[in-house]
Structure formats: C-alpha cells, structure tokens
Length: 295
Image (cartoon, rainbow, N blue to C red; front, top):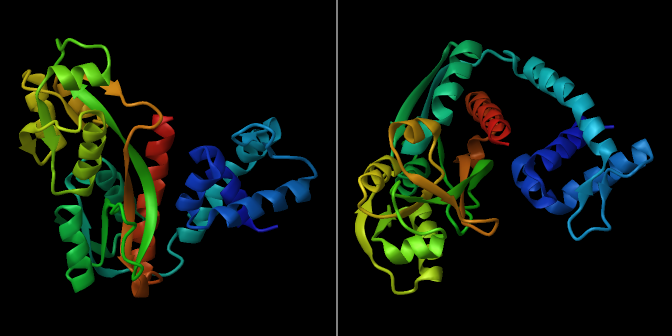
C-alpha cells in the first residue's frame, strides 16, 4: 500500500470534499476516489457513507486518519530533512496579506532546516508577480490564483482558500449582509486584483447597480475606514491582529459565499529544483497548520 493513499485520505478529511482534497494533493477528483476505493478494499470496510447526498466519513475513516497522521508527518520530516544540501539563492514574490500570515512561519522553517538557502523576498499584487515569474525576475510566488485557473506553463499548488466576509462599523444598523450593503456606502476592495474582482462580483449579484464610494488596495486600510464608520466592505477574512487593533462587525457570507485561492506557483520547468521543492514544502506545512488552527 502506498503512503500516498493515506495522505489522500487525510486530505479529504481535512478539506471536507474529494474535489477540495484533489486541489491540495494535486490530483484529479477521480484519482482521489480511486485512492479511497483502494484503501476500502485493503482494510475491508467503507471509509465513506455514500448513501447521503454528500459522502460522509465513517468512524473508521477518522480512526485510521488519526492513527497515521502523526506517522505521515514524521516520515515527511525525515524525507525533507536535508536529503540533499540545499543552498544558493531563490527569489520569492508574495502578496501583502501573505507577508503578515504564512510568510513569517515559512521563513522560520526555512532558516531552521535550510540555513544555507538565501531567500530574496519581493512583494506585489498577484498579476504583477505572475508577470515577473514568466519573465524570470522571480523564481516562485505565493499569490491569489486567477479565476481562469492560471497558465498551464506554470506549476500551481493550492495552499488554502480564504473566505470572504462582510465588515461593517461596530454600530452599523442591519442584521443581514443585504441590509448592511443597502444601508451603507460600499468601500471597494482593490478593483484591479483577482480578490477584489471576486468581492465585487458578489456585491453586484446582490445589488447590480451599486457603486463604490471609496476604492482601497489593502484589507488593513479598509478595516481602518470601516472602523471609522465610513462604510462596509467585502474582504478576505481578517487575521487576528486586525481584529484586536480595530472595532468592527464581521458577518459571514454563508456557505455559498466567495473565496479566493492562495497558491504557490513556479515555472513548470523548475518544479523539481531542490530550492523550490523545499520552499514549496515549507509553505504547504505552515498552510496546513493555519487550516488546522482555523478548523
């Protein structure tokens, strides 16, 4: 039995659906289904109840995942621990939000495990970073994946999905997203970015003629404006330091609400280079920790 099959099971339980797990482990949903069927045949009992509209994990699936998760993590640590001496320079681009969330912990992992690897950091919007990656100015990036999916000449690894929420002044009147949007000025989130376009599409589905009063490029600036009572906005879910720094209301957009996909991307021709492999693994590790903490 391949360890990959057990890793797939853990990904399905962690992400909730076969399709989401497929993105995480970089397989097709059909391949994920085949891995699960093999495990069911191997252990002689079902891992998912398929009678329901959505496949639900059985108690045995949770028991098996709990048993192997620690072992898989330990094996991955052994595999990655200086298998080869990784040194040299690598240029990494990140969007602003990642610099305050995943990047610090990923850099800590890299400095601890690969002290001879020199990571040069650049920042920018997703579209600009993609251009720099194609032109060879940077080696990899962590950014928002375009809605169209992204160039096939690049290698994409999904790290996490960021849920969009509505933020409103602390004393704003209204109990629903629709009421708050209708009763306040709309502060638009970065209309030139993928995340901003996703947020605007959601707003215009609810209020087709709605126009923004203010356009801002960063979630931090938007929350400062919202906290001051200047309007409401749809933005990626704020991280804890912003919640502690400002007073504002935060409303869920529900299960069908918009999300943006955070991905690690490099040129397909470079995907097996040791420096990029350990860089990608570091971000996958800290992204998994972030998902577990949010669960």
